[in-house]
Length: 112
Length: 113
Image (tube, rainbow over all chains, first blue to last red; front, side, top):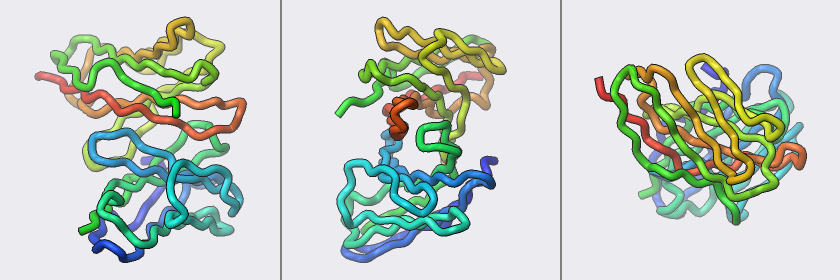
């Protein structure tokens, strides 16, 4: 167990809707990263938050946004959902941006 | 952009045999590498890491080898057990540049009892 918890575990939405995914980081970690993992693929970096500020972003459109709170928990928001957004969304915490990441079990999002 | 790749998408080994999972990375500037194991329904789990100033690092039943000349990384699992069945990912980053981890597509390891 890594101590990183994500909610919900599964979610079904329809195209055009909005979704919020939540993550609690491991104790002592102030950096949270979000990854998208499509079926049969490796995780793709969405963005990272460090001390409540976005600290790096991957190749994802602006409708993917996030927040980090003072307790270092985090949210991933996706607006105007598309079918291709169906994936496992992984949250990971770490001590610094590129130190080893400790992942949660993910949220499986299905967009119909 | 540059990405991490793998030579074999699937690998089947007999229980008790040694497993070798390979990975080719394309960014010659990468200086920190990590192997992750992902079981069905779970997030990736850290196995072992290595920095570019080393060419070998050992853990419990696992060894990571780094060949910077040919940009190749491998994970060796000794005495493979059924519990080792999972998808294995290598990931790279430029640690000194504070960049995010880049993952490859993964190799599925199946252990035959």
